[in-house]
Length: 55
Image (cartoon, rainbow, N blue to C red; front, top):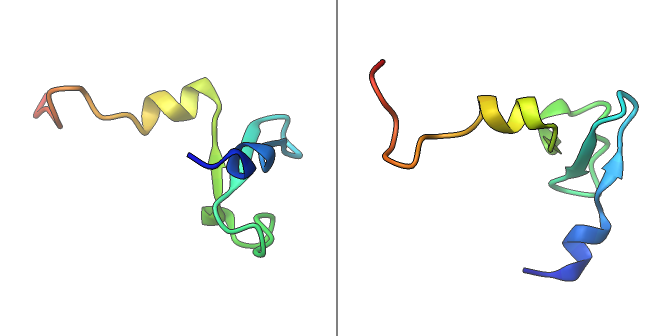
């Protein structure tokens, strides 16, 4: 891991902790450039340890 990646973490306009995948792209215009680190988002995007289940 590169420490400069952690220096790019910021609080966005909705008060969520996030960082831009590509810092040269404005995440306000290209929404899929931002990684959202809110607990709900991390949970929703998570995959069970055993893989995807067919529940």
